[in-house]
Image (cartoon, rainbow, N blue to C red; front, side, top):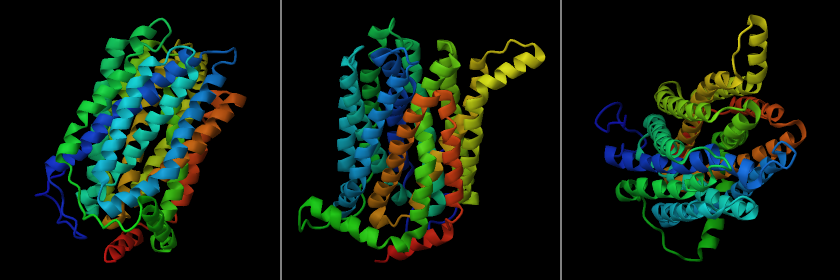
Length: 452
């Protein structure tokens, strides 16, 4: 449900609630880009790359998993190096839509070119994944930078939750068509499933059009007194010098670094885990996809409304507890299934027990991503929103770099099932660090800076 500008509490901090059409336009980018993250990173192409493009070289896919980890880590590292600088330029020149459009086109083109990645074309696949995932990840930061201007802090949880929920609905539409029409990610079905890249690109291309039609570019461009590179470094340097004013944002970003490391591991390896560890059938894989999308949408929307009542920090910590439970359940699925069958003489299959685990993981996924984005929005002054969300993108993707590389290296030694427990440790560390975050103080810092 789109927040109504004529209902609810009055706006504060001088941030009026945007129109329903503009909020929908902003959320449609989440709807559109889920075709990429779900089909390419999570469900289809990741499994296709590891099991068919690279294949099993007698090591239970460990080398293939490592290459997949490296490709994603490189793309995330590029975001770490460029997101804050791009954010600073976007704020200074009021060019958020222009940067968003560039990242959108780059994602569409690179994703469509995945059609040409055939078995054995490992390096081509890695290069296209690096380019497409880099462009997609930058777009995530760029679209998030619009959030603080869409309403006052007490509405940001609902708006962010609506965006994430709509995103999972978009993923359900895109991947539902892919799984039903294109089929499984296998060597036998390669000539059909290779169209997943062009389909994901086309879905993103068309579904994001309302974003560029309805979303407004706020702010006035400042005059260019030097080149963009100098402007970016000067603004980022100033922000770094003033970070003591935003201590709660800084602490939260450190917490986010650990929590998103765990989230990116799950996103990148959940369906690979299902194929390699659980050994699920195609039908169960498809059911898992639907379960995760529906529960993630429920989690994003439901906890988005909860957040505006109990606070963003408490909601974020609640999502971390959900994640710890989900990771332990993922790891324990084969053992629990075997134990239950032994004790009661049943014939349960691990793949069906794993579906129950998927519900918990979906709730955790949708709620944690929505809560973290909204909390950064609460801590961000309007005049520096793109830059601060550039730092949000930096923390997210730096998390992806070290999280996925750690998982890739660890699974090469102990196997994928044992390595997945790393995620639980990362979520616990994130909870501990977040204890020192003071949400009212962080919100006050954003209000005070707005007067500069």
